[in-house]
Image (cartoon, rainbow, N blue to C red; front, side):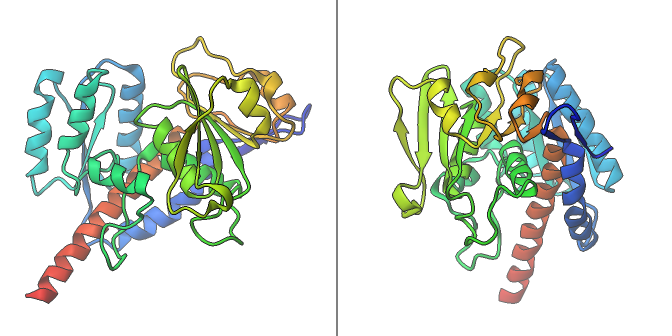
Length: 322
């Protein structure tokens, strides 16, 4: 069953598989128009069970979509060389590294040495710069779209599916009027997600152990890109009651979202591999999305498709110039 309702509450539970199916047709159509089947290489260099699960899901989804996928399991000390080799291998269209590897700045270095033209995770400097600057294209003619990080983009696609995005408003402003709390400010997911939401017009409260930051495009969303303000002395008890959407991705099994702060009718989304929300969330939320993994995987293929489309466009333009 695609989605479920708890008959004892008014909360609608939406499963990730339902949202993924809504994106599948776009990916299928795009892949059918490519000149050849795209190839994706994944690097697994850790014993993290979440990374292993992500790799298995990637392999399964690639098989189902006739995408060539190769998982290369390597020692983390050798990973740098393997990435550099894949960068110059013409048979490889896309590269994904299953993090964490070192759990420190070394991981950021590995993200930056992945060739931008093969980075399906959208974590290289060019893509992250565009994200934070609210630049949505790679070229001046606005033909080649930039690539966004998979997990933040998956959350965006879920919000679009739930019609949190107001399609009456202009593109880029469609979250204007919404207040959203994001509990996670990692450089891979939480911070980019807060920036994306704010750049689309939302007032975002970004939460981590160090405190709360507010991401907005200013009063009346008049600024081109988001700005960040520290909310000194604030806690979840301050921002959650103001929010009509709460998104949580706290790793580990010790965190439980304090449901008593949740406003009636809020939308709740969990992107952690753990259950950040307890059963009580269904007593107050109007919509609850307990996991996003299957959406993340289809977004990964969507990013691979975009990378190959951009590559073909550059090749065609080069032929015209000559």
